[in-house]
Length: 237
Image (tube, rainbow, N blue to C red; front, top):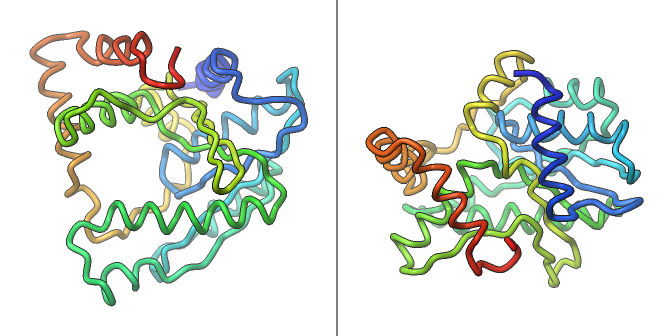
């Protein structure tokens, strides 16, 4: 998987949904996983020739796991000439030692987003970019349908009025298999996720369900995505 192909998908999404304007300062959320590192590469590459000039700030919210080493990510950011900041937190301790959460994902996301938004504003960013990809889109929609009883999904662009920052998702057209190929081709310095519930979530169940359904009915994934794009879900038209 070549960088040009990933950048092509990202640029198409950026243009389709008007994600970037002149002189934007974009905080890139870096978890250390393959998705966020691919996003970093794509935006760093686009920065060189995209007609609208923009700046990048890479930000990692560390949950406090001692085994999570982001030094290789820092080296990659240096190589790509993107400023990198690690926000140290004690989120893991709060979730698993103090609160002893059995289903921590929602609270974890809320705490991480709060820490991320605060640092992004401190660094002068008016936008933030998350690495949600094609599979994340259809998985989120199906989770909403099955667990909440509504046809819904996050939007490609979302203005967050509380933090006065706009969230963009440039990888929504990129298949996860493409990202896996890119990770191998570019030997991305992926930081393994030490979270105690990683791989045992509702999202993982939905991921496997979609894989099974797509095997039985080829093209199902693309049809689900088309249904979202052509729906009345805010932000997708």
